[in-house]
Length: 492
Image (cartoon, rainbow, N blue to C red):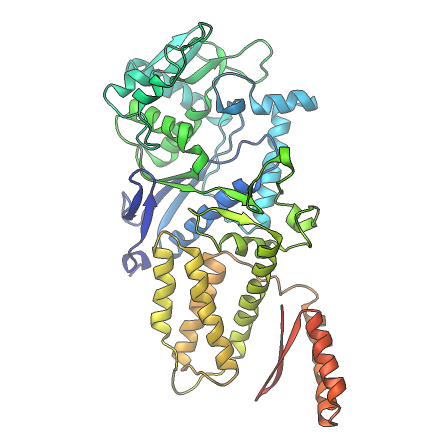
């Protein structure tokens, strides 16, 4: 029997503002769409946090035995400054400033995006479509919405008629905004806007003479609005209705609200059953902002090139740190917190590496079955990775107790324990073992030699030398553990 039939998963649906039992539209299959990056600059940490959250979700679905089609787009056109319907395209602006082609900008920062995610051991999505590769689909959706009487063309641009749509539907259903309040609080148009109403948003924009990125359409030589691409790509690859749509909470309004309106207007049904949103990041308790210098880029962790960091961190440590917060919680970065996570990460890895050296006994003093279900219960509760990690550290305590001869497991329980902890650490959390590298054999040899020297010193009752070897190794993050079967070591 598939695991998903044995585990009842609950997830927080932003549409209902509560946790709900998860039930896919088609048994055994999940369609999931996540809004990807706009590739006009290096990927920022907020992007990484969002995509890491959905990498965790994707991994757990696959572990449960679901067939998952995970679509994550690349926005390479149409995203205007300040998320507005006027201004300059972000990619075109970058191209103009650097005097290169817009697609050179797209290529450079798409490669950067993939390189960063690869360092963090992300699984690639099933499909990674681009906005420019789906212009035809976007034009066809606009035609349908116009035919429905829910969009209008002015001087070559096309706008979605929010007030007309709101006569029968609810624009604001996701963000819980009341359109009447929005109208009341909006200043009158200055007479220069083409829109009928301030709330209307662009489906197609006529390109000004200086605009570099442009395509032919029935209305003008122009480009699609930012919100339209996700509707076009999600429906093309996942259908008119699919299971999960995700992104950062900053996308809830207007981007996701506009997606719902567009899809509902063109297909006459709500497009998504479960909306999921990740929370924001802070640095040292403050909002991240380049203007104040309170920011950090993902690669800074690996180079140490930041005033906010005291040292270099390996990617699995940063990933482990980020997964210690639930995806709906604010995540605060600080050097102290990273240092603490680093110690916890190496404790976990060292314990996992001890597993192959444990010996089975005739009886078990640990309820492996209950502990295993506790791990599943954590993930089944809206992908609660911090609770899962807490359960894994219960396992770490037990591993160390078995090593010290204070606990025991039968061969059957030991096998189940090994499989479970490896599955959740490496397959679900997506952690990699940074303790295993090209120099590990050399390190082990040197430490073993020092352990022999220490044993000789102890045999000769040279406690001063014995303690000195132990303490010097500890200063360098190598801890010795004396047990009935000899001395072992761990790297912290």
